[in-house]
View 1 (cartoon, rainbow, N blue to C red):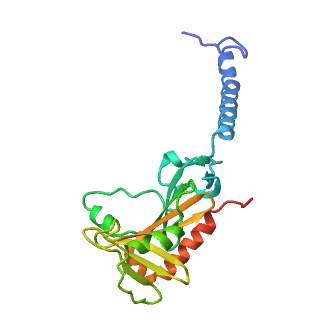
View 2: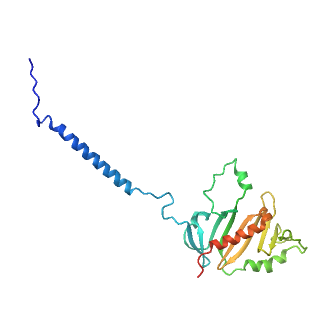
View 3: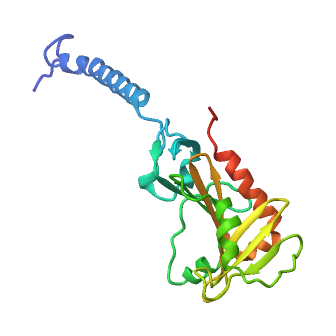
Length: 235
C-alpha cells in the first residue's frame, strides 16, 4: 500500500504559495500609485489651451485695438502686436464673434450666399491718406447725380452718375445717428454697402447687405458700438 505523508509546514513545496499574496498586494499598490500619478499629471486643458486669450491686443497704424480672436477671419492675422491690416466679422444684430464656420455643400451653397447674417470689418493703417470724411465732403459730390433726393425715414439716397467710377452705386447719408455709406445695387448678387470711419492711425471699413438699410438706425448704432468695443486703452 502506498503511503502519503503531508509536507511539513515551511517545506519548499509550501513556500511559493506563502509568497504569492504579498507579491500580488505589492503589485496592486504599485499599479495604484502609477495610476494616481498619471491622473494628477494628465493635462486638463481643452484644444484651445487653458491660457488661450479671448482677445488679442493689436496695433494698426499705431492705434491699439482689443480684438476677439474668433472674429478674426484669417488665421495668419491671429497674433498680437503691430499689423498693417486685419479682417473681422461679427454676427448681426448680436455683434458676437461667429462660431466655427459651417461646411458648405453643393446643396447649401445657394442658401449660404443669399443669407448674410454678419457685418464685416476691415481695419487698415491709413498712412495719412484722404480721410473718409474728406472723401464724403469733397470727392463724392463731384460724381453724384445733381437731381435732388428726397429723404425717406431720415435717410437720404443719391445716385452716382453712370459715367463715374461709382456708376453702379448709390450714396446714403443721415445725420442722427450719423451714417454715410456707398452701396452697390441689387443684381445677380445682393447689393452691399461700405461705410468708413477713421480712428487714430487706422481706417475702419464696415460692409453689410444693402437690405439692412430698412433698419438703418440699428445698423449705424451697431457700427458705433463695435468701434467703441474694439478700441484699446487710450493713452
